[in-house]
Image 1 (spheres, rainbow, N blue to C red):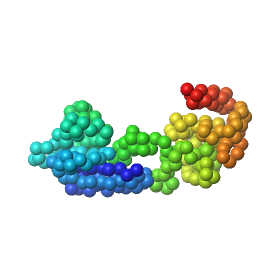
Image 2 (image 1 turned 45 degrees about the horizontal axis):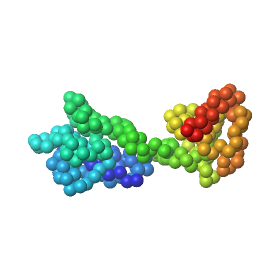
Image 3 (image 1 turned 135 degrees about the horizontal axis):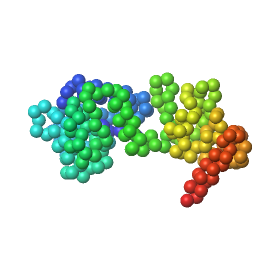
Image 4 (image 1 turned 60 degrees about the vertical axis):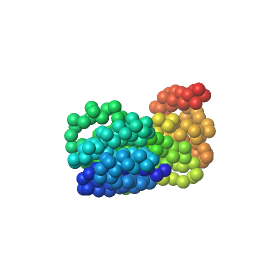
Length: 246
């Protein structure tokens, strides 16, 4: 998927910084993007009137002496065009506008001077809400973020401070991480079972389950269920099975 993003800010330096930061963040996240730059609300409105659609708009609130403000652009999008699908992130030096923007349903409100971390946080929030990351496991190798579809992961192994993704096609991916943390933050919501300090398994790839072991497909590997987790795992296994059966 390629994201279509508009940045509307009358200060050249801020515009350039935001464009460069967005490109860097999305490159790290392996997301393709197309960014269009505007220096006035009037020009962005004209582009919208021409029928251009964006996934995400970074919108300054005030544009010098111009009559059209960022609030006006937001009203055009939400009220005139009845477009509630595009996400809007407002930018300003002032916090006072936050209540005025409530009815325009902005994704977020960023205060200048903009910081890399706050922009990245907004982008990750957008990707999560838009469902772009929701079915992926996200991990880092060095400074770069990568992702694998959950449906392609048979199980995750912890070994020597590293995590190993065992994929359905037989491939393995290694990176530094903590299994307990990744399970609670990402894997649990996708019906993985934390069967052992060294293993978290995908319910969809379990071909045989007993209180002591699970057999995983397609490799056929047998993994141990730690004694201290057996009662909890049995309940969790039954819960997922019943949930899947409706």
